[in-house]
Length: 71
Image 1: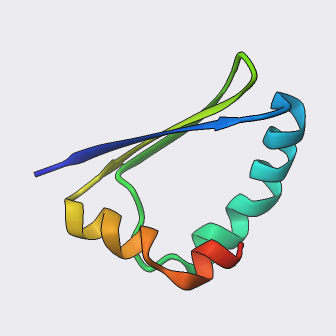
Image 2: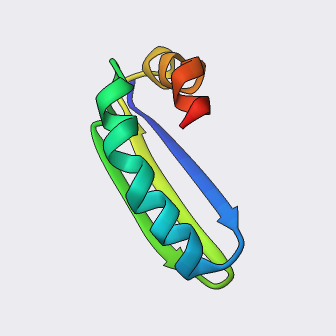
């Protein structure tokens, strides 16, 4: 069953978007699991990220990847 994961990252929106844009190519490269859909949008005082994953296992595999945490 598909799973929706949402993240709210607080801080300076412009700075966060710059860091997000810089990190995404690395994250895609190191991630064996990919979401079915991924959207990141600016919000008041930060950014919001929405991912749809094939399953909880796929989300867990991605979230537990130590290389992801390094990036």
